[in-house]
Image (cartoon, rainbow, N blue to C red; front, top):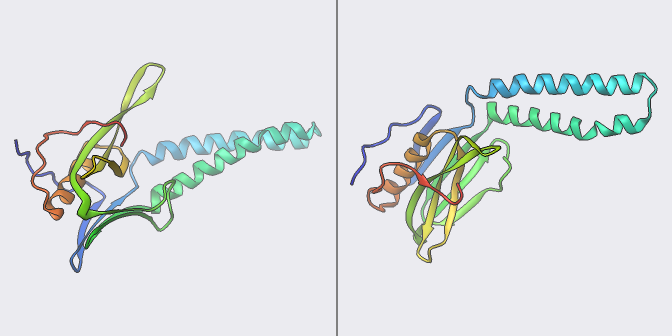
Length: 190
């Protein structure tokens, strides 16, 4: 069963650099404004607690207690900055598939795999949530090699269309044939 072509998702561009295929996906989404609001409240509360602990002449242990909270607030700010400026680049050049985040590295190291060994590109999803309920899903694209080993190419995508589009472009460029599945399947890891 062939599926209809997936349109280029918002924030994604595809271009060629010689014989190489480059897919650029911006990290920005409107969801970042919720995180921005949360970070402002978090960092405001932590700053208030720090100033109160120091100004009251209380024990330094109380101020030191908030160091972890300070670090969490700084990490939130870092994630927000990344959301506004970073992009993930998936490049297929010659015999290599390379994945990297630019201009700043994300949480994962840049990845590269041998395109000659790839026999299938798969799209998948993982449920997210807590306390026994599913709040949504993250989508990803994985490569399967001739030995049956799966390698995550890109994970943590918010929309199935992003994963389906990436899968479609990689399958077409690598000449692996049309993907037979009509939707993202549940994955052990995305």
